Image (cartoon, rainbow, N blue to C red; front, side):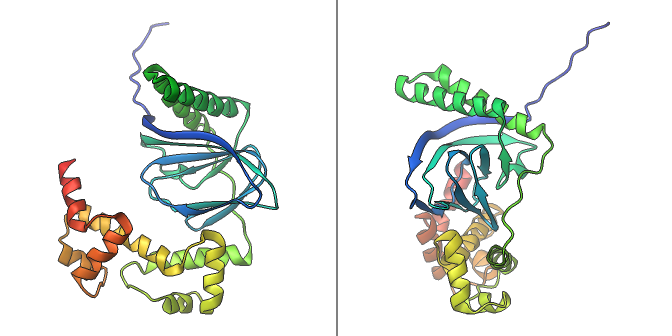
Length: 270
């Protein structure tokens, strides 16, 4: 049989490791949530946890793995009175087939469990011994983990389906549908066919954040996107229906601890 050359281009590539740890949390643990620029996975070793990722809500048991994409809001809490045992790792990731990983939950087998533990062990070695070789091992293990999951052709685990989770999904959808409209909390509640107190109660249950605080975060993400597209501050302010450029600047600075102009300089310098 004649040989042939098969050119391999990487489907996924881990460029850097941000953090990694294993820990046990009490049964009253609650993490209020965040957005960040890195990819991250959370792997459940023990207990039951509740997770919200944008408009999806899950309950995860031992053997479940969830990925967060850059910019995705996520929060977690101990569920059903259990202590929770977790591995969490964050990293920079590039690839053509990774888009659908964000916010997805997968059940882990023996192979994937081994890859996760090996990646964490190598990360700890790299951190304590300043071992550059170990950092490459971490990247390779995470890449193999992701490739193994992608090769399954699985859509992942479905989120919870209750009246409250469905209302929560509706609230998030309305916010995303009206990013340019600068809605008030009362207007969002009206679009969702919910009373204002009930909407706030449901939203806090899954995010521990105020409705307007979360909505403002989505609008600031859109502002960043418009700035990247080359829009001027006046154009961004007009598109997002801010009352003034000054209010846009103050809102942006409150969210990202820099002004839109400072952010624009960072983009141009990259």
